[in-house]
Length: 216
Length: 216
DNA sequence: TAAAACAATCATGCGTGATTGATTTTTTCT
DNA sequence: AGAAAAAATCAATCACGCATGATTGTTTTA
Image 1 (cartoon, helix red, strand yellow):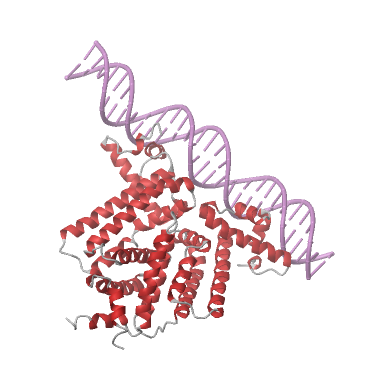
Image 2 (cartoon, helix red, strand yellow; image 1 turned 60 degrees about the horizontal axis):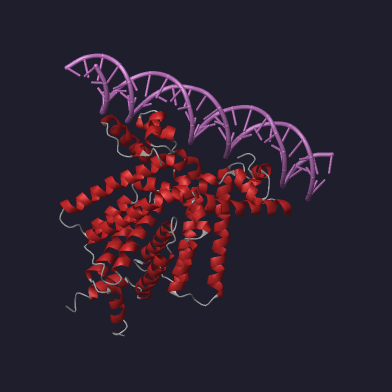
């Protein structure tokens, strides 16, 4: 509270580089050795700095890790947004594939370790909540844009949410064993479903239901 | 390897009771204080037994926790199966609601703590893999039965899988904040989607797509 | 020169495996 | 059938390593 200045972006270039290396190392550690293995000493070593230097920048492991996931998410979202802006519109399959990649990335693994640890640690949870909410919102926004979806249409918002929840579930399924074959298949079908739901716009599923019983 | 007998169901009633109390306490601890907080001492205290007794039954924390999640999953699956057998067929909404409840239960929280910890610990992962695969399979089977789905029809298998992945993602979303309002809404829509996909049987989504372009 | 940034180390508490000790139950012996 | 011995079950504690916060020391930058 009083001396939290170290967590801000430092002025010195050398210091900035140290901070960045710590953040990147923390993500790597989280993704590879998990929460339990991600001690300040391990991160510092991986970043090639001393523990004292790490402590200077981040007073606690929790602070370090939270900043790291935040940093990683910003970079990743920026990359994805650039991809959206640069290319011609992505196909639905490309969008869901991109999401699938995001939620099976080392960054997601790192974030998951953090969220799960935070779920049972009140202090960490308070620290992490704003970040998790922000990341979730941004992912939603990105998906809406990528799919060119109109959320004012009933049901579309839920469909986008379902897409993200589904992809997060797929990320979970990839934790212990490589699930990519199943995921690829499933996402291909989901892209088809999305095409039906979104391209038809006004409650296409419900509209289709209503049109089906009538021919009988 | 040589003296692994303690992990099997013991013969003495007193011993059996101790074992069960440890298993139940372990699930409670995982769900409430997470992986990091679930030490043998904490579990033993919660179970009302000494650490020595806990060590007698389970040589390592990993063994205790793995056995606990296995035990909890068996109980839960049995309950769900009994519910399937006892009642008249459940509506689709009831099925997805039941799944939503399962994947936001303390048991799921406990299992998630275990899976996530195992994802970065090779030894634990080897121990946990068979269990996770079994639980996943059983959940799939239960869902197929509950929905009276015919997996020989193309696309149905993927739809069941998507349902489970979606629900797991929803479980994740419930970790840090209460997500039940959104979940209820989303699952209601998903039940409608399932009705369309499964009740229509033969590749209903693709059939619906094909019938749509033609009227134009 | 003072402040910022980085490095090294001290002091403490905690979790774990191993070990020893006590109690209860089962098996063996007479 | 009862007593003694063995095994199972449970409890307590020792020894050690590790992570952490705090503190002191050194180097770099403004």
